[in-house]
Image (cartoon, rainbow over all chains, first blue to last red; front, top):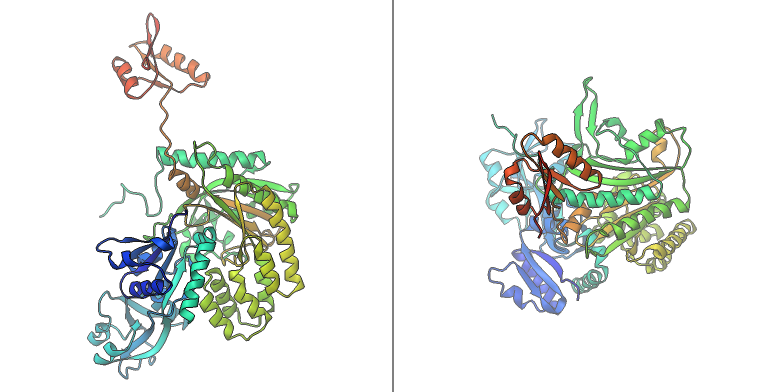
Length: 211
Length: 404
């Protein structure tokens, strides 16, 4: 038998959604449910192994080929820009990147250079580069919503799910940047060397999510 | 002030002992293959003018180039690729040389990679360029060199076996489709990058906006057309076009030829190989080894590149990532440092005789070290597994064996 196919999952909600998907496909994910503190878990009947990691690390592991496949949000993919195959839009983990400002703030007015606070500097840079707009980007680690409220930034680029946090802090979406959902990614060499196994799994996944 | 005098810049490293030995295994083997195929080595400078790399047919992102200025303030880069400089040499100094030209190189290339991603800035490459022929045999020659590298690179290593794959593609299919597609250059570039990333969902969404016709239908399928020989039959159903069918037929013939010489190397085809940074105009090849997450060989045909330097000749070539292959071999083999054959110790005043003695043995092909402390020579030899010790004294040479 071949080495097990190694799949890196983004810890947290995407992990749960992916495990649910694998179970709907008939795989035995008991080990993942009873993981304790272990980070590499077998799915014996599928000749697969699940690796649990943070989103950015899922991309790193798949890009280097130490994991064959991974499940990760489009948000992290856009920020990291790795060299890998992005085969399936899994449909879950839906949200969007949006540009938000204080309510009724005239963001596009005037000739001054605007300051944007974000956890996603690359996404932000690409978005404004496409508009031909120079902006100052400030990287914020925690609640980005604070930056415009405290007067550090004119706006923020961040993930928006329901918009409740924005509303409660007197912010509003000015423009959508990109739609986000979970993606199934595959290492460029693994797809070639383990084509049959991976294509079979991908096909099952696609059938399941299209149902 | 902070000094950086004890470390190397990120993405570079010192190669010592084992790592060096592994690299040598790869370099020696590839060099032997290239030489036996009639290739001559060339060395291009480490520094080149930026203009050499600022061309239409290949795009080098500015942020990845190591740039500096020369003493006249002109922009110079540390070589990011060896094929462009070779095109420059061929189009200038070798313009009157008889064709074909067979050239090989073994030298590092430098590209600044994103920080902290475990990527090297300095990558040791060895490769060949076959210049002056657009014949099928030229393609086969370069592919056969790649196959030799994949199948024999570890032959000196006891018990080394790793499964390798060689993949063929042809960018002309994509170019033909793009030529006929009614879309803006920005859309075309987006389509290319989505095909390269095999991003099926986003590709489909984009093509939905461009209408439903045979071209968009073919583009949807293009990235999925990879695998073994069955791909050609699948492709024939997708592309209903005589020009593309011609390319497919020639690829299939090549696939047959290559399969016949492939030995243990698996041959695959991927019609969705469309890399932005490539100067390729037809055949594209990639080589993979089990246990390495990126290609270890890449190459192809670049018939337009030399004409950009003012010499219109076709060419085909390929490069081996020496570090990647050494890494694959190193996972299964760790070269032992080899002890010297003989230790020569000189009594005080007999140093000249000791050197003469050592030179004699070295001329016979032995590895001979000097004992820097003659008193301690035998113990030193035992500790370092040196089998023979020669004690050179005023009254002659005495041999002590440490392996008995």
